[in-house]
Image (cartoon, rainbow, N blue to C red; front, side, top):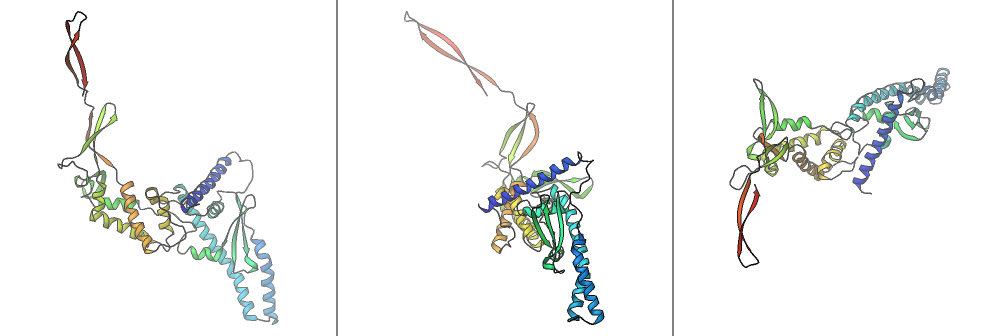
Length: 369
């Protein structure tokens, strides 16, 4: 299975998880009489019971002077106390992630939404369980009875293991990015580029404020296709109710070759490439957004080399031309469809009679124009 097929398969699995979430939410209104927890409370007693005894033993040894290594014992006792702060911080980080998760899910696969192609299915399920949108169980353990190696262990409602998350790693990651990768949203940058280039994109003034403008959706004359003699290459299309509209094709190649376009697109792409600690968001943007036009995919979790960054920039230009600029634009106002002209031509036809004489007939030919 190639990269594209693997990414699409991952996306479909995540969508199936989303269906499970929707199905569970649909059942809730029919289960008002049932006292159930989507995610049962975490059992902290099971985690700390053995460590409370260890802590008490250490304190006793330190007090009566029987500790064989007082420095190590004090350090271990301190780590038991500090572990509560680690748990508190991780819970705060999970909460902040799940708050963002809801909005990202609404725009899944779109700008500003969660990366459906790159997010592992285990992480997708985990975040839904932590957000209590999917049934599951969250436990906390000390790996190999080491209080400095605390981890959340997540299972689904059938007891099947989903994911393990070490708290220290989670807290470190949360300083720079979220538990999930979202797709950058360049909508504002795209609109700003258009407004900043009125010689290319038609804008109109809002009210009396010369600085407040809106895009009309039109492209100025220099970037429309013309006939060989320089006149507008117009064509008509029916728009219903007996009306037609003149249209003119947009010269996208002329736009791509223009210096303002090259500089503007390079700037937006450079901001994307330099905005994040890793290249994960750029890869997510490529796989979910640009690939719709380029059919080119990148491996999630891998950094981009300079060659890959250059291709991303050029692909952004192709995507912008395809998705942000129309193929054509209406010219003038709609008008009634012209009535068909009917012309009648007479043709004289001579027919031979049996007696050898000719009979002259006039036949009408109808031409519609």
